[in-house]
Image 1 (spheres, rainbow, N blue to C red):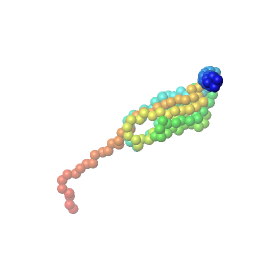
Image 2: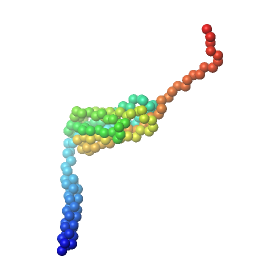
Image 3: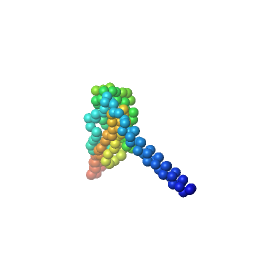
Length: 154
């Protein structure tokens, strides 16, 4: 009898778990899209630094426009590592207006750049990822001119 009750309890427990899993997608499917929601349209999703010298200015801009019918609010912008620091507008961007997200990369690091910035907003697509790329090289130094010959005496 104990085995029958234990088996029944186990089946009931597993059945409840299966129904709970099926309920989540159905609830997500009922979300309604706002046809007036703001949209972020970027001039470019990638900013190419090209090849720059170590210690050069690492600030670049992503220009975008709100093509929706409601104000756009950017709640966060996060770099993929500590070397990539974004700055975004805190005030609402009205429909039809443009603004920029500035990204500062730490150019003390040598080598290839391939980083992302994740932007979170109230746009129809709430998360947008943009990228920076390029290459940091060691600074060019001019060769020291060597003098040959005998020193001049006065």
